[in-house]
Length: 407
Ligand SMILES: *Cc1c(COP(=O)(O)O)cnc(C)c1O
Image (cartoon, rainbow, N blue to C red; front, side, top):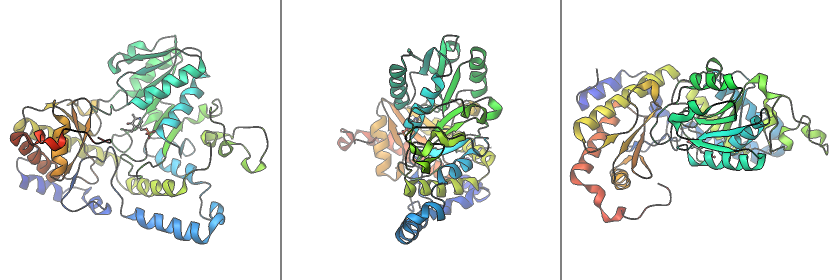
């Protein structure tokens, strides 16, 4: 049963097994943060960790920390931790570079396995399209763009690599990994999954679903900090058959042999390129460590409840807003998208009232439902504020007529 009042929402929060996580984050009092799907909030442990890395590991131990403090191994160590969130094994994930760069590496590497076109959804997050267009140009392949709904049917013999984002960044619509992998396996194509809006949001088991290649973000649901390194996954059987197009010394079989010719390391390390940003990488580890304390099944179950409550309150109090996200939990991620022509002004008016969501062009107000930090009462209050903004038409404030550079 969904709560029917703020008091009932608060009662549900008191029994919430994830409630203890709220205080592990440094969120300002009184703020309702519904943007953890875009920039995850700060884990309380992270500033101390960054200070330790800077003052002791870097400041005092200096270059010795590459060995002593586990810096050199950090990308693979953190990759092993991220692997647990996608059902993968140790040695199948590495934390490194950005999502865009990792996508490029895997698309080009996978294209070498089979001739044919590179296929991508045209409603994907734009960077994925840019990366794929460029990868296609440089490898002499055709780039085909189709809508997410048409993707499955478009995977035929002439396709080499498919790039698919499991959870759509705008609507939260979720693709069926196992079904698409079945189709790809039939024609010998490889799918590179972008799990930026999936990891830490929905339960994942890539080996079970037949997925062999994936990338994803560290700064969204994993709370790794602004610009945190991303990660990439390559199923073990495939690793030594793929060559990264960005050959660098961190991916060399013998990096301290300083040989003049490149020889790729065995295993996941071959997808590293150059020196990793330790301050950011170790901040990401702090976020991932915190996340691993939670039970993913509980996180997802709560996400479903928060979504249902959000959707019910919108239907009850804001009929002029259209719920664009799928209502079936199996078909969506962990945010809710609301359509309205004045979405930009609506989001700005909410931010001015202490409810932070974000705007995605042309007409979407987007709200991340992050179960580690949000309660049912937060959702209730956010929807109350939203209904006030709609009733008072606060979105029409002339201050919202011009847009910020980051929306
Ligand atoms: C957030 C996001 C990215 C971000 O890529 P960066 O290289 O980290 O800027 C890429 N793809 C998708 C689907 C995303 O949601």
